[in-house]
Length: 366
Ligand code: SAH
Image: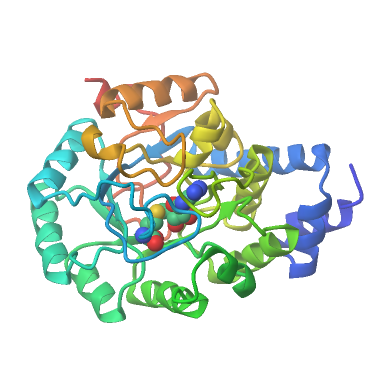
């Protein structure tokens, strides 16, 4: 073990750390400590969730965006993107395909598209809730008013993903133009939680200007906010953004941070993100071994998928069944497997009881 032994012991005992200890741990942890973190996170995950990994289908239904995040390939200033917005019919059809493959959570994600009104979304949500009453709908549409979040919750969305991106205000200003405000992002997260959504925050690992100090802010924020979900993957450059020539995030650091999140929040829903799977060929299995318990393959029609390129290398092909079969094969090599179900956070789970276990007849195989 290395110099961080005392801090590590404290983390294991108390499941939280003061910010300065997070900084020291993240800056100085050596390979032994990282392996110990992975092993503890893995043990916690298997104890809580067995060897089951939930799968959700993500529909990237609009790439129109009024924002100009410096890292993101669909930022407003990128004139080389063909902009699209799926119709209700196309979204419902994508969900039907996912449902047939066993998906019981649909994640509707998009840029901040001014044409996506509350009325448009409410109608879509009511259609999805009627067609798929056994499934949950997660939204990931960025910042909206509290009133809007409330009406979408009333219309049947039960979860919302809004990555905080960084909990350090100065770093936030490095990643976003001045029109985008750190305090507004944080206010949105608080609103979502108060309204009753299962709420997800998260950050990229290795974004430009990020070091141990910024990641320590993130961990301090996460342990206070106690999100239900955390979306965390490596930063990967996109060729048509101001960060085109920045270095990508590091896989080992991403896996270490995932393990730390699992240790702090044993019940958290933690996806092995698409960015992690893009960076590491066996990123799904590596993520699960580090504490992940969710995977979110795309159900976006392939013609649009290539236009929702947040970073270079994001996978643009592959049908739902084929992708699920590949992920399940990857997971079976580590003794885990995909399991169909809503996969609510344990504290809010109403429709499913007990720990999930691997279903031998996962619906997508049929
Ligand atoms: N408009 C929505 C959805 C954004 S896309 C929102 O604001 O929440 C989902 C996530 O992809 C972002 O929150 C960001 O963390 C991540 N992302 C964007 N560009 C990325 C990049 N270049 N590398 C890695 N992740 C990226």
